[in-house]
Length: 333
Image (cartoon, rainbow, N blue to C red; front, side, top):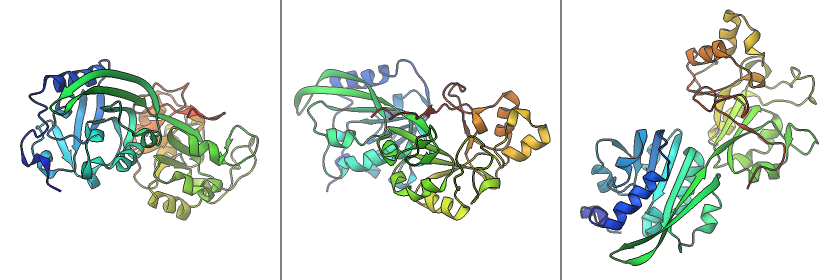
């Protein structure tokens, strides 16, 4: 198929007043919020990307010619170069196109794997993509319709905003206990998944984790053993390292939950350092019992972690106090 970007600005975004309005509405929809890492899927030549309110802006487009024309403040990415978390992911226009540029299923896979905060879709209101959008693991929070016209005609565009929540899971099973969740609950959860432990029953249900953003928080002293540290819970066996590595090969992320699951606030500095130091480099840390203070946060940062998860009522959703929701009932779907 011929690349439309063999011609500069093939869709005439730069000369169409309605596209300037569309761009400004997209930027205004963020309400003045600034993001750390933004990804524009189907970025073209950067008509919208260059204006995104983010410290780092990345653009992905199937057209290498389009990527070669991105402005200096947008880093071009090929499909296999998309990695890590983006607290803003936008898809503005790609869903309206056809051919190789319209792999909606792949767009959903990218979103579910890499979106960590806000998702924005902008497309024709009449576009039949409901089935694909329902597969996005996020909560839709706002829809903004507006009139739009270009050389192909007039129609209604809509901006759709989603937010990605992170949920805490422990066991996958049917036991009537707050720390047990059914396979159905895991499957229908509209968000990112974190598993503290990681219990063998999670490995047994690993098919549920495919194409999801999943962090597996394990403890060094309990690999392949049971949860004897938790006197209030039924004994369950935890995964060994081979099982964790198998799930990592599926796309899950390994995170550190300390060696012994101690309350880190009560430890001496030397013992605190030993507990938070991972056996190999990892980006994610999880506080045992969700408990931390300033000294603990500093130790986690010094240990080389990029992020740390707390619980929703104890964190402020900053880099080392990322909040998570407890799943006592069915999560929103």
